[in-house]
Length: 311
Image (cartoon, rainbow, N blue to C red; front, side, top):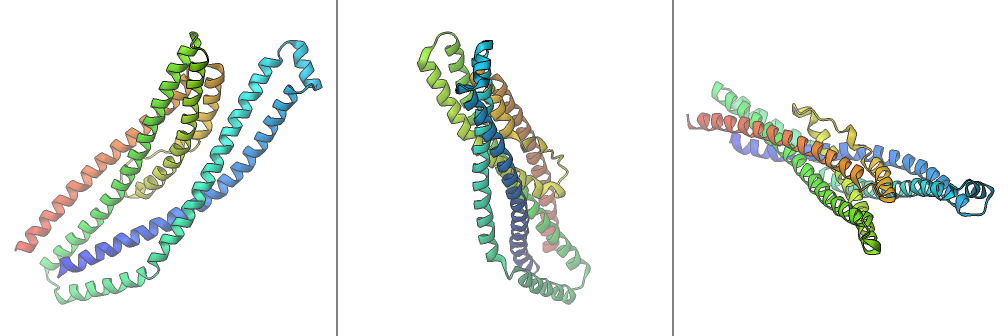
């Protein structure tokens, strides 16, 4: 009887945890949406400014003539083009993030509709459990109920850690693909520098375009991983520091443009991604260790429950 009601409570607790998680993610997404909207406005201003700077230098303006006379117009134009391209890539990524967040908000609201009457259902079940406890108010029953409650809490914690680990694995997989793409771009770039010609240049640029799309995906997976980590931070002893993830796309694109145009072999961009991947791997390993501890605790509690049931 105790196991039956605890099983029903576990299923309801699972739904309630999901509801709380959705509510938290919805509020977080709303905050992110406002931040991205502000970021979009700022990036749009920068993009417009950089576009004007490029056009000024490309036209026969006084500024353009001035740099031509000094013999540094092409050098300055390259710099302006770099800044414009970096601004454009960051602006496009921001639009992509905005679209993702807006979709997330719609999905969270839709799923929350399933859990409207959940609180009332949980109160009724708790009352039923209390009446059962009062009906069998002996020491063995009290110990059994305490252990069943502990097992429920541990099972829910295990579920959350597994979800965070899965999100981390998805991010790690995407970063591995990005590293592979950049390493390929790097090898084409090296050949290009040694006279590979137009084929090598085209191949390298194709890989850079591929990397750009992969970064959009990585940034989305970073947000998903951050949400899962923030959800378990209070219930684990893991030291979670994800502040360095926040501006990954921004600093990646700044470095990528310099690497691409100046042809410094894509080293800086590749190093940035490898460093981020190492941080993700470290967090995944911490999650695996925490999962191992939780599963051991659950096994011990289940053994206690079995002993009490057999007595």
